[in-house]
Length: 357
Image (tube, rainbow, N blue to C red):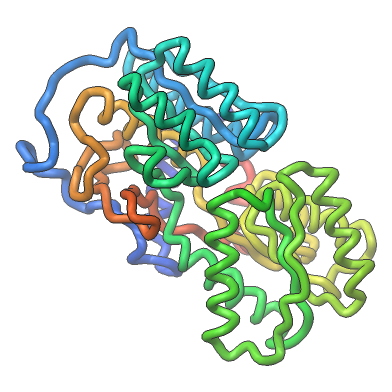
């Protein structure tokens, strides 16, 4: 397995070279100036501190890579990383684990929320106990966190997926969306931007016939894909903004001999989707490096615990090899940090990246 630092370094070079969705990040090209108005100077160490990451569910490769990036940074700082992953992607399962972490008196919790609002009482209790709480990947509401670590600009993700699909189907036909859970804030935000793009753009011959939910479970996503194909025989494309869903959809299209008849696109891991990009079932797709999402959340957690930032708009912090970042205002009224721009994976570059993540 490649060294984590090398992976993050490669991803940084990647994000700097991409122009497709440029201009959406909060990353700063120049280091943050010392003695800034919004940061508290401190040299406190985090050795002996406990930092938790709570992802959506166990057995999800994307979540595992997020956790790996988080763990690497935390342990390199001399602290302890606690990785939590519920068996099912539900708010109830996460609430139980949040309460366990509060009882353990951890110093910080980074959570990829299974529900935007339902986690608020548990996370509010954690913050009342002095625990630093931030969300990553899938946000919780602004009252439940100090800051959110966002993969990329949600509007550009949603709009780009519709634009890509339109190109794949040559501007006409029935399309469907295969999402994760119906409560996933990130999925729902991307879907809303997809709908907005459909309404505002020149897509009069595209018809969104169904939004299906595979709950980020592979077999359920397979079942939902098969149902889409059965119920909509004229279906031309499936958009899956979830790494589990896109792999399931591409497998079904391949197994049923529908390559070239139904296009699959969305957000996928290169290591899992190389076969399907090569065989044409997924002409191209997008993603960021989930390892970097976890790593950035770890750096933000450390900065919160040390008192370098509070999560307020304008706060700046260093994120190791990822560079310098600034906290910006989020669309939900809270604040966030944008990792950078997603990257397009296609037959020309998939072999280069399938062994990276």
